[in-house]
Amino acid sequence: SELKRFTSYEGNYTYYLLKSGEETPIEKSVGLKLDVGKPIISNVAVSKVTDSAATVTVTATDALSGVYRYEMNGVSNADGLFALSGLSPNTSYKYMVTVYDKAGNSNATECTFTTEKTDISNSVVTVGGTYTYNGGAQTPTANAVTVVLNGKTLGTDQYDFEAADNIDAGT
Image 1 (tube, one colour):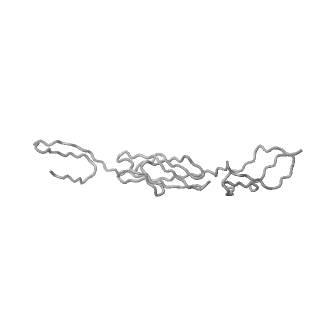
Image 2 (cartoon, one colour):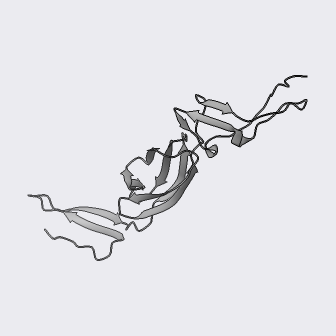
Image 3 (cartoon, helix red, strand yellow):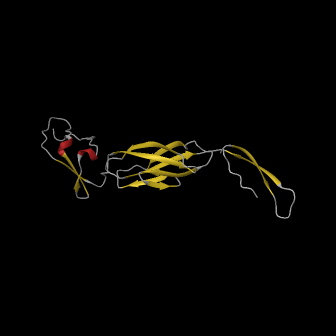
């Protein structure tokens, strides 16, 4: 038996197998192609964005050797799904997503998103200030409003303030 070493990676090769006790070898042909191309990242989607979490889904293909792993922010997996938690509200994030194929080639792209503002539906809202009746509805300024959620006063960048459907008081 002779070991054939390929001096060129790509090409068509024929080899012969001789079964023990047989006189006629079996001929087999194989085509080899070297994978030097990077994986193709077709989609990076951000979903389930809240004020403290988000899910990033990466879709990629590699026709020759197949996708081996996905990596984002030092975390690796085989399915391209990354659940992020512990994020800050109303904050822009930028992550680098890298995809590797089985031949060791890689491709990278950026993923950016902004978390939602804090959900204040269970908060205590206090409106301060003095308002003089002028015959119409009064709208307090944003700095006259204090929002407290779970004992913590939120900054004005964590919520949107809007006064609507005010009722005229007095005559």
